[in-house]
Length: 196
Image (cartoon, rainbow, N blue to C red):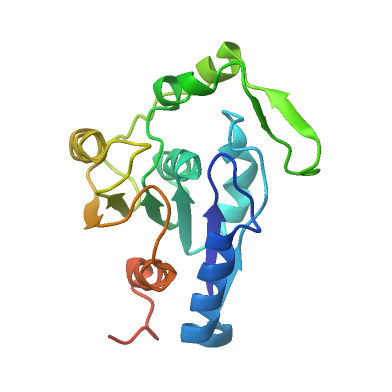
């Protein structure tokens, strides 16, 4: 069985449309041979990735979108035994989250309640990504129409600091084709039952 950990971004949850669509595509295409684990967590917590070390180590593929992409890349940086697929990852949260300072963030356990206010101190807790020469394979999907995280800046960072497979799509910031992402997940692990 192929196990996939999906880490969502800011303002999302493990029950988002992206997760539902991805789960449907994986189940429809690959049957019971794929398990999608999609926890709801607080991605604005700089150390959130640490909570998934044990889970990720038992997964074949870790997927992260936006700020969830940062957490997936932190797991890859620490050589957790998995393949990685990131979509428009927030690769520099210290800078990219500056615009959220002073705002109330979502409360994932109670959507009707206000979340905590995001502070400058919260923002500064994010550690920069620092890849060594060796890390697990990473597929980095860039939405060329992303208005949240600049596609050119993503490309430059990935080439200079990470060393990974770059894929360009016509997407905006969000996953616009769950079937395409499902195929990339399966393909990234080079799973034997996958057929072109």
